[in-house]
Length: 385
Image 1: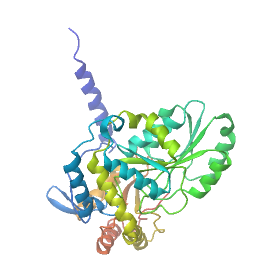
Image 2: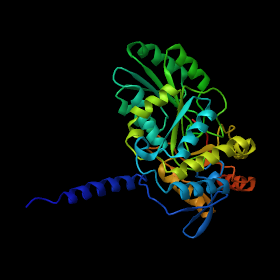
Image 3: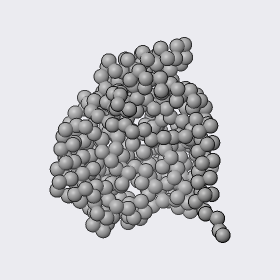
Image 4: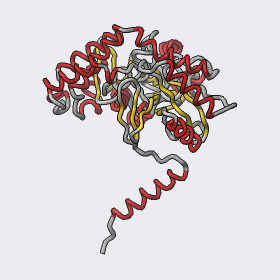
């Protein structure tokens, strides 16, 4: 009698889970109810959340909620199919026009998520005999898209312009096309790419630059634009989805060739309508957009750290067990600050990732800083690499 394959599958999964547990790297979902004003509830306890990317608090803004509700009532809960088949609802058309205008580009294309956007962009633009150069701390989806493209992919040390130039000098000549991948704001360290210098190098070597602006849109995005401006609708804009802003020719090409766009159901119209309303608020209320960075700098000043470069401040701990313990201690004091562990960050650099929002007030920020000072007396509170 043949063996039951499910037994070997379960044995494999159980063994992997045990290894993860032993290394303090197993991840678990925790039921959490998010509310307005950076509030959260876990296990019946109210918490102040510093773990959310809702940088302007717009996911609960009545104007954003109303826009989503109206679209839900009018267009239904889902897109129905791929947008190329039947899913190109009017809110998506309006959102792409507004995103392109916001980024100073000719056109935009909305994807089902930021991850899906980066899975589709690189393979649609480069392939075999081409070159991708990617910042070592780029998001997982940038690396996933690069692998799917089939192009030769080389890492350069984080924000290291000298190494980027060296790699371009050595490898660009043998490649038909070259693509540089970086982020405007790096999601785990909160620092920024030296974008003007990268664009200068790209022009010198005829390379295209894609900037992942998931954590910069609306809060830290002033300055030069890259030819390819990618981002998400799920952070500053408080909704869900991803996008690319570029020239009309590039967007038209991706509409036909980005597999993660062509072969997946379109974004629900309500999500597009919510993002559209949120983007209008971002543009109309610059004082709101400035607040997360100001609060992050208040926090770093209180802890004696260099000025924050974005609403993200890493509190470096080291080992995963210690990061989990510090997170639990803060939760006991009423703060939700989740531990970030390998493989999201490098071994030995587990941390708390503190994310600031316009929904926070100064008292909450000061209380978190004071709690960290009490829990880690005499230790550096954190900082970017």
